[in-house]
Every structure is written in structure tokens, then in C-alpha cells.
Length: 213
Length: 213
Image 1: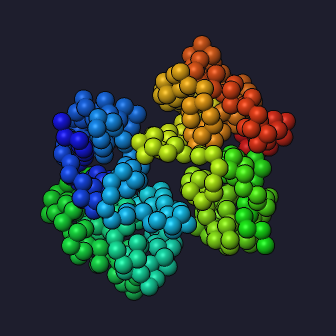
Image 2: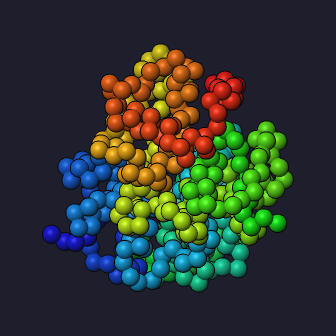
């Protein structure tokens, strides 16, 4: 049995985060693609509470929830640090991940998929959220500074998935005029060699997203 | 200026978590009580995104979000470990905290405050969630084993606040017959000397909860 297995789904940003973390550390792993409409008995066994991907299996022991898996990977394997070493910087990285997951991703998706008065309200609220990231990115190439770090890996939905959704819905929430730092980060992000190699192809993403939106 | 300041609110379970973590570590701090209906300019300055308690200020640098603050405290000060040392055990502790915060607390509150068909459905769902904790607590005194740890500190809402809410609403979601391990944990928890000293008084809690429920 492979020491490390990952139960994932190619179009899930959460699953991709874990793949990025494993690859950043240079950890070899067996990847098991899950059909989310017909989940495998193993996935349900290893994640009986949430029944979701990703699940990392290390020496037979399962871990669920992408943010928790990434910290485990960072603490378990040698290689480039994913979280900052300094406790305060680490707390700040965790803060931004939580903010992106619980506020930004939800707010930006809502702004792109709702219309009328509700849509206008959602757009204003999403713009306020992005403004916090805009300020955080001032003078920085990545959230992690010069290099990709925890926040960048975790921001893959707003850095890549969201751009495709925005295009499909004909929306323009993110513009260079309003959010120059954030748009520059998106540009650096999707063109970064490491990130690019670990994102799903745009054409395939469009196909799958059309079924969801 | 004191090295460590905590902006909190006496009846907030999130605020109390941080106080417990600081006290477990023996960290001296200045406590600043916030009036949540009239938040101080300092709280808004230090937590401009969420505008919530708790906020920890360490050497002038602010940290928000109780779970992030607790990890910072554990990483910064010597003393008894709040998180387990082993990376897998640490991942499991983080998993349960996330589960308690995002699923249990929300589900248990809904089960106690909704009625009719919706209430019945919420009760069934909450019972399924508690069953996972029931199994996790099998053969254990605390979530952390023999001693109070991260999960126990973070479970203060379901261990104390919820019992008072249940009583006020005349509900009986948690019974010894259905959840013997969980009820035994609640009993150990509220009677533990350290926890007891760091929980708000029941009479005062009833007064404040009546205004919310």
C-alpha cells in the first residue's frame, strides 16, 4: 500500500490545494479520483462525518478538511515551509485563509450568481471584502511575500475558479481600475509555473462549471 | 502598556476560550470588557474586518478569531500544551474544533430554538451530530484524554452555554440515556475546578440569554 493516498476530485479547489501542498513538499502520493455523484465506500469510511473530498490517508490514518490537511503536511514533511515560521505571521496566514474561505469565496460567488436588487447588494458587499485583500497585497507579489505560501494555495478559488465563473456569468466584479493589487496577484498566480501546472484546464473547467451555474 | 491585552465580553464563549487558554499557560493579561452594543474604537481598529471579540493584543500586535488566537498562545508561551504534540493528534483536535464550531453548535442551537416540523427535523440532525462526539468520547474523560485540551476549551458552548439554553427553552436534546458519554463529559467539564472558575455564573447567563432567545 502506498504510504500516502489522496482521495480527491479534479475540479475541487479544496482537493487541488492539498495536491499543491504535497507537491510543494515533494511528497509522493497515490491519487484516487472520486466521482462525487457516486462516492466510493472508502471515502465514506475515511470521512464519515462530512463525506467529502479531499481526504489524505497517511500510513492508513485519514485526515479530512483541506486546511487541516495542509497544516498536517507542513508539520510532517521536510521541504519548503508552507506556513510562516513566526507565530504571529502564522496566525495572520490562518486569519486570511479563514477570511477567504468563510467570507470572500462565499460573497464573491453570490455577487456573480445573483441578480436584481439582491445582486447589487451582493456586489457592493463583495467589493468591500476584496478591498481588504487589495490592501493586504500592497507591495507584495504573493500573500506569502515573494513566494507562494499557505494563503496563496488556499486562495485558488478566488484566484482561478472565480475568474472563469465571472467570465461565464458575464460579470465584471474584479477590474484593474478598482483592485489593481488583487488583479496583479491573480495575474502572477495563474502564470506562476508551479500553480499553472496544478490547476485544472480552463476548457474542462468551463464544461463542468456550466453544469453547476 | 501591558504586554498582553484581551478585548472580550464576559458572556461570549469565544472570549472565554481565549481566557481559558491564557490562564492554562499562566499568561498575565489585562482584560478589557467590550460593550457589544457600543463597540470601542480600539476594538474596531484592531479587528476592522469582523469587528468582533475576542481580540488579543500582544506587544501592540492584534490577533482576531478565537481558534487562531489559541494556537498563537500555544505556540508563543511555555506551559502545559493546549494542542497535542503529535501532528496527527493535532490534526484530529483541529478537526473536532471545526466540527463543533461549524456543525454542532449551530445544529444544537437550531434544534433548541425552532419548533414544529422544522424543530423535529433539527432535533434529528442535531442528535446525529452529537452521536459523533458520543463515539469520540468513548473511554475518555475529556476530548484531550485525562486533561483539558484544545477541543475541551473550544467546546465550552456545547458544554455549558447550551445546557442553560436547553433548560430555558424546556428542551431535552441531551439525555443520559441517549448520550451517556457526552453527558458524562458535560458533568466532568462543568465541575472541573479550572473550567468552573472560568465560566460565567449561571444566574447572570440566564439573565443575558433571556434577552437573546
